Image (cartoon, rainbow, N blue to C red; front, side):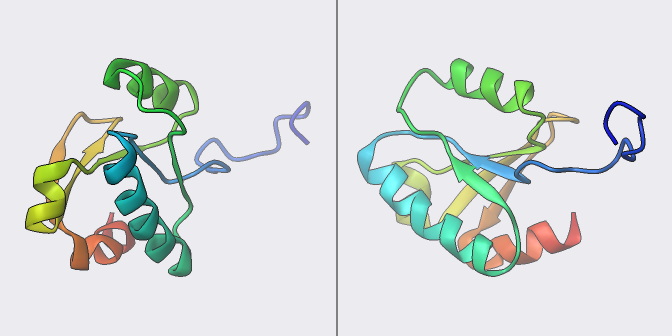
Length: 106
């Protein structure tokens, strides 16, 4: 089907979001949030290594993942995350208890 160009251009086959790996503590926390999204039908992944953020952005763009989720120490303490739309560069601060709602409305 791919050779015949039968897939719609808007079809997304990869994850809707990627959690950037900011370190062990942050990635363990992000993994819990990621499981919450997955339980609600939102596909996502966690970058495996805590490498430079520019490398993580490059990976997300190459894989055409539309949203990057950043959770650092401050975000953990204050129970929110930074969500960046990689298509528009628009960034949102989203309370962790509203993250599923964010993805269901965007």
